[in-house]
Each structure stands twice: as structure tokens, then as C-alpha cells.
Amino acid sequence: MTRLAQGMVMVLLGAAALSVTVTSQTYLNYVREEFRPFLVAAGVVLVLLGAVTVVLDLRSAHGDDTDTHGHSHGHDHARAPAVAWLLLLPVAVIFVVAPPALGAYTAATADQAAVVESAAADEFDAEFPDDGPVEMKLREFVVRAWTDEERTMAGRDIRLAGFAMPNPEGEGWYLARLQIACCAADAIVNRVLIENQPEPPEDSWWTVTGRWVEPEGSLQEVRDHRFEVTEMTAVDNPPDPYE
Amino acid sequence: MSERPSRALASAPSLGDSLARGWDEPDDGHELPPPEWGRPARSGRTATVWLFALIVLALTAGQALLAGRFTHEAFLAWATVFTAISLQALPFLVFGVALSAAITAFVPARFWQRVVPRRAALAVPVAGLSGAVLPGCECASVPVAGGLMRRGVAPAAALTFLLAAPAINPVVVVATVVAFPGQPEMALARFLASLAAAVGVGWLWAAFGRTDWLRPPRAGHGADATGWRAFVDAMRHDLMHAGGFLVVGGLVAAGVNVLVPRDWLAAVADTPVLSVLAMALLAVVLSICSEADAFIVVSFTEFSATAKLAFLVVGPMIDLKLIALQAGSFGWAFVRRFVPLTLALTLLFTFLIGGWLL
Image (cartoon, each protein chain N blue to C red):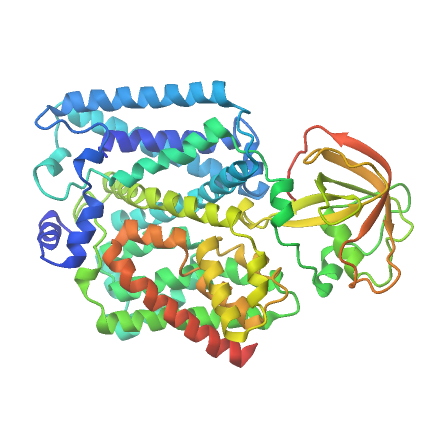
């Protein structure tokens, strides 16, 4: 790959990184929100580096030929291996396919998030606000449902947001949300089982208000925690697909 | 490294270099546009500009015509994970090559001669411990190690740094403590086993390694070239040599991530040795960033603590993305020897430290 081509590949790659962070918010489909400044910085550096490379190369073509020493001998430092063309693949995938956020397809096979008892106490506030439904993340809901022996959630109105996914093994459907630590490659799922509402289309997003169905026996014995929905609103455009 | 010694190295009749050269100087038939034999450089440049105009046009047309036409769920999940791995690695790669280029262009070779002990036996543990200060993941450590070698740091020490940095830096240690609440011994075991494996590999490499196994990383200008021009050249060189391989690793890792069901793992969870090997294998194929892997492995509740430790120790040192990246930077002759050695030592120390602490 010639140096000119390398410069242009870098510009395109940088442009792809900037297009998902600056001109749109689609980076949220792939990485965590905190990652944005790093992606923007990487995009800017790539565009600048590519532009400088192109300019240097074109200038050397116009006579002051101090850089093309490489053409005469075996290892040409200005060239890059052909495999570098593959850097255009993520560019093509980002611009043409524009992959959506992971959803029910992945949630059906992803590992369920582990619930560690001692984590719960540090992770969330012990007290709920007094009035109105409590908004919480699905992660918080399942952690509380599995670990809070005080059962503080019982009888409270709770509001959750997530996407619908079918339950292949029986009644009802799941409201699910994927949780990522770094990028979409490490997605794990949190989900609650809903039985008192007809199943909406797979991957449609909903805000549901309702109550935790308190299990009769031990909290940990339950395979899925259940949620009794009183009100359900469609969400058109989830702000961040992951939690 | 000046032009002349690097040419001398390239012409040394070793298997390592003939293989390395195969990767470094691909058959011109694969180049687009082909540098038409004897054609003046100017028209080659014009062809390149036209080619990229066509690529941009194709991207725009593809975006307009195909947007929303992709509906196959598995393909979309694969595309999302591939994009995620690529984007997530990108800042680390750019940061890594920038740091490496800065080492090459702005830090004089004298500095390293003073800081890094001359004897490899001493330089290796120093390099291992200094891995604790680079807060990045594995994508950043490969180019930085290349930059260190270019500046005359002994390869064994640079490789120890490469292995240790992504595994024992403060961000990773904190992430591990957070992911395993109430089990700080997991982070401690990870730190000790990773450091021991990295230093062990370094010592073995210092004792038995041969220079011609390793394609020395080269930049466009000699060791004497410094300043911004050398910085830009070194950065472009490293980025282009490592970047393509990173994409290869991302392609494979995304495929494995989406296609391989996790159920088969549960089958081996109860067998003591097999479960450890299975988790090590999973770490290699999933290629998760070392700052995120602790959050993943904690969800494998049916596995023993030692099996989880294997995932945390092997993953930052060996995974598909990293193997591809190392091949791009140091050549396949290197990877063929370095990766099995690293795997053997990471497993050894996983069993030893896991048996002792967990």
C-alpha cells in the first residue's frame, strides 16, 4: 500500500469514528457513553495524521523528493502491508450497514448478569422516594429482587425500561436490557418475566410501570423474577440502548 | 535503527525474516492500484486518488441504497460486535502508536540505557513492574513495546512490558476489585499470576530467544531522526502495520462471539482441569478488552475461582486480536514461538497462584 493510500485510509477511518460520535449518536450502539471523548480524539488524530501524510506525499511527488528513498531497495518503509486495506472494512460496515444496537437475538443467548449479594448494598440507595413510581434500571431491579431480603420493593410502583423478547420456555415474555462494561462484545442481559400483558413485537422498546411479584420462597431459588404490569408505554427512541 | 543495519537484517538468511518479509512486503499483485512496473510515480498517485474517489462514492451509494436493507439477525449482531470491537480498540491503538512514536522521536536512546538495567535478568522484572503504570488495554501495549525495542531496550524486557501492562495496570486492577466485590484475593491473584508469567516469559526469552525470530520494528527514518517528521512517520508506520491485523482479529472474535453458544461451556464446568482450560480458551477466542473481562467472567457462576483466574490471566496476554496485532508488528515467526510459551506460563501460574490464594 502506497503512502498516499495509507493517508487516505487514515482519513476515512477517522471520519468513520467522528461520524458515529459527532454527527450522530450511534456510537452508543457499540460502546459505553464515557468512551465518546476518546473516540472523538482518536478520530481527530487519524484525520490529521492522514491529511499530513497525504500532503507530505503529494509534496514529495512535486520535486523535493527527500522521502521516496525507499523505492530503490528491498524494504520500503513508506509502504504498508496489503492487510492494511482491511482498515476500510469497519469504515464500510459503519457507513453502509450502520449496525443497530444488540437486542433480543443477543439477549436470548447472552449470559445473565451475575448478582453478587454484597454488591447490592453499595450499588444502590437503600431508601426509595416516598411518592410516585420509582424509576430504576433493570439491573437494579433484578439485583434487589434477588438479594434484598428486606423486600423493600414489595408493594411499590416501579418503572422499568427495556425491549421485549420472547420466552421460549413457557408463558409470558421478557422485558430485557443488555448491560455492557466496555463495548457490545461483552454484553450480558438483565430481564424480568411479564405474564399479564400480551406479548409485544420482539425488540420493541417499552416503559412499563407495575409491581414486583414477590416470590413465596427464597429469593435466590427463583429462575426469573416476575413483574405485574399496570401501565405500558411504547418508547420510540431509546436514548442509550445499554445500561 | 538506521537504514543500513535494517537492510542487513532483512537480507539475513533466516526463516524468521523470510516469513516476516512475506508479510511486510506483499506481492505487488495485491496492491491496489498496482504500481505499474516502470510507470512514473505521478500516474500511480493519480490512480490512487481516483480509487479513493470511487471508494467514497461506493460508500455514499451503499449508504443511500442499502440503509435498512440488512435484516438477518445473526449478521446484524455480528456487524454490531465487529464494529464495537473495532471502535473500542481504536483509541487504545491510536494512543499506543502515539506513545510509541513519541518514544521513538522524542526520547533519546541514552535515556533507556540509563533507566533500564543493562543485564536482561534485571531489566525483565523492572519492565514487568513498569507495566503497572500504562493504563491501557492490550491494543496499546503492542506498539509501545515495538517503540521500546526500536530504542534499544532488550526485546525480552520490552516483551515483558507488553505482557504485563494490560494485565496489571491500575485501571484493570480496580475493575477486577469492583467486579468481584468481597473477593479482593481475585485481583491479587490476577496481579501476581500475570506478573509472574510475564517475567517468566521475559527471562526465558532472554535466555533462549534469538534475534532473528523477531522482525525488528522499523520506522521510516533512522534512530537519529527525531522531531515531528519522525513522529508522524513512526506513527503512520505502526498504525498501518498493526491496524489491518487488528481488524482480522476483530472479524474472528466477533464471529466466535455471535456464533458459538455458551451452553457447551456449562458441560465442562465441574471438571477441575478441563474447566480451567476451557476458560483459557474462551479468553483467547473472545478477545475482550482487559478492562472489561472481569465483568464478563464473574457471570460464569458455575466455574471454579481458578477457572475464572485463568480467563483473567490468559486473556490480556493471548487473544485472537492480540495475536493478529503481534503478527503485524513482529512477524509470524515470532508469534509461533511467543504465543505457546506465554500460554504455557500463564496456565502454570494460574494453577500455582490459584491453588495457593483461591
